[in-house]
Structure formats: C-alpha cells, structure tokens
Length: 58
Length: 422
Image 1: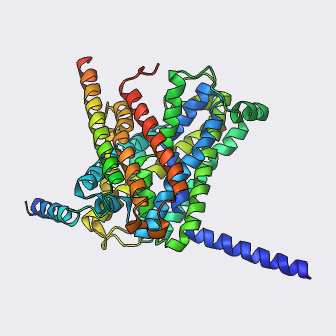
Image 2: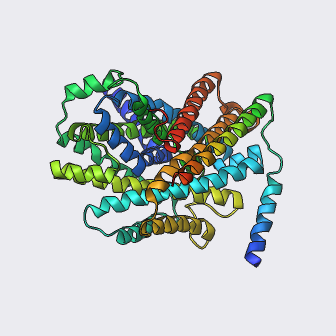
Image 3: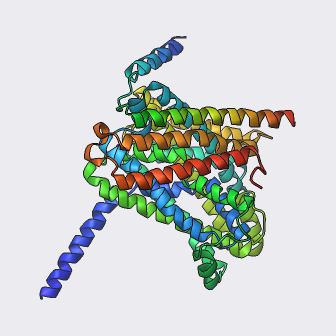
C-alpha cells in the first residue's frame, strides 16, 4: 500500500514538474500538435474498428 | 624527404582521426545494426524471395532516410544532455510525455516478444529447446549490462554488430550472378508492376528501417556516453556508417534468398533458414546464427531504451556507468522487460502471430508522434541554439518524416485490414 502511495506521489510530482511545456508554442507548433491529436484519434478509432471486425468475424 | 615528411604527417593525422572515431563510435553503429532485428531479417528474407534482386535499389534509398532521422537524435542528445523521453516531457508537457512513455513501453515489450520468438526459432534449428534459449539469453544480457561501465557494454554490442555481417559470406556462398544483381538491383524498377503486394513490401521495408525505440535508444545512448556538442560531427559519421552497414547487410540477405529461394513465400527468417539448410547447410546455418544475433542485439537495445526512458522520467539513476546497487530500478526495469517477454514465448499456444501483427500496428501510433516531437524540438531555438535545424535540414528531415508517417500508417492499416490495397 505504501509503495502504491509512493508511486502515486511520484507521478503527481512528475506531472507538476512538467506541467508547463517549455517549448515556445508558436502557431506552427500548435498546428502540428493539433494535427497529431486528430491523427491519433483517427488511428485509434480505426484500430478499434479493425479489432471489432476481427472479433465479430470470429 | 619532403614527401616522406608529408606522408608521415598525413598518416599521423589519419591515425588520430581513426583513434578519435573509435572513442566516439558506438551509438550510431549499434542502433543501426540492431535495427536489422528478427523482424527486419524476416522482412528482407521475404523481400528477396518474393522479388529477387529487383528491390535492392529501394533499400539503398533507405540509407539517407535512416541517417537523417537518427542524426537529429545525436544533435538533440549532445546539446540537451537529455534522452528523448525526458525531452518530450520537458518540451511538450506531461500529457504528451506520458503518452509517449506508455506507448514506448507497450511497443518495446511487444517488439521484445518478437525478438525472443526469432531467437528461440533460430536456436531450435540447432536443437536447443526454447526454455534454454530464453534463460541463456536473459543471463547473457544481464552479464552484458551489469559490469557497471557503458564502454564495456558498447564494445560488447559492437562485437554482436560484427557478427551481423555473417550474411555477407553467406551471400557469396550461394554464388549469385553479379551481373543480375547489378542489372536488376541497381536500376530502379518494379518487378511485375506496381501493385498492392509490392506496395506492402515497400512499406514493410520502410517500417523496419525506422522504429520508435531507435529514436529513444540513440538519444539516451549519446547522453549516457557523455557526448558533447564538439563530438556531433563524429556522431554523424557514426550514424552514417551505421545506416550504410545496416542497408548493406539487408541487401546481402535479399541476395541470399533471392538466389536460393526465388518465388518462395517466407513467413519467418527461421523458416528461410530451414529451407536454406536443405540447399546449402552453411548458408542456412549463417542465416540462423544471424537471426539469433539480430534478435539478441535488438533485445538489448529495446530493453535499454525502455529502462533509460523510465529512469529519466522517474528520476532514478539510469546510467550503464552505475553498479546495480546504485541504480536498482534501472536494472530491475531492464530485467523485468526481458523476463516477461521471454516468458510469453514459453507459454504453449501463446498468440505470437497476433503479437507480431499487433506490434506493427501499435508502433504506428508512437512513431509519428516521436518524429513530430523530434522535428519540433530540433527547431526550438531555446533548446538547440545554433545547433537547431537549418532550412535545408528541415526540408530533407521534414520530407522524410512526412513520408515515413504516411507509409507507416498505410502499413499499419494494411496489417489491420489485410487485402485493403490488393
């Protein structure tokens, strides 16, 4: 239990340490990250669809 | 006298350059040769068997692709003194950091399973039971890293890199027609026309050339080795030499299967080795030894990439220059990755084919993200200073990254929906 608590504390500490992105958020960077998000969402939906097809086809 | 004085001066200068390179050599060579892992060997063997020498020209195009991507990790590591995982956390915040770290862990672990599949299959050809291979590999890999010196690890890894060259004498043993290799291989052509199957093979070859773990491994290795900004030119040379060697080895594998197994459907490198044994015992043996070596080298680098990444983020001591008592979590992560991946291979009826396919799909989620972060970090003046990407580097690197993202995504879709491009 203590180890779990220590792990959670460590994760919170990491989240605090890296809360603010250090890279300058220019429009190019923002645009790239937005496209990356959309790409990943699309890819995950495609993967889920693919696995549903595999499961339903047995 | 003047001539001899000049010759002496020139030789001394050349020797100094070689000596300096031997000190800097390592991360680029190791990561590139390790890229020819068990999955890579299978892809090249299948490519040669399917298309003969006709795609050799395409493999040559992969030299600059591999070089330009990995060169960026050298600069980023030497300038920031941070591994790729830490650079992502620091540059883009905790959300993208956790995404990359957890995705890396999943991809690395799944890839490790495929390395163990390759290693057990390779030694099974010589009659070694899988359980013995798994135990021997884990012990060997722990011995390699537990000496507490990065230098020793690197030189041992370079020894395994040298063993990877076993495919070269193997190719000469099958007596390929040099005329056919040069004519069919070096003139760009698409044998049988450009169709879905050829497209799948092209994508598979690109997919094996750049893997997500390579970015993380080389950057962390550059940091652990202690490379400075002044070492960047040698780091670049190391990476270029590594990318040439990896493609040369791939070409020799293609030549072997293209000569001996034309038209055969290869599903694994072990199957290719067994079939080669029937034709030429030595060549089959070389392919099996090479497959084991490739899996071992890949497994070492992949486990280290994960251990370094976790150590950077969790703040554990994470250097190969530390003893086990100084960095217990670093070595525990390394061992845990190995032991669990090895154990999966020993489970009867484990879905190993599904895992092999799954790793290619999951890698597609991490590779584009890691490459985009790499390009953005290399363009951040506050991070890179005068070492940031120039316009030409951005055009070349950006073009390569966009191409890799598109092709690896299409490859992932093809794996997920077989026959989509047929």
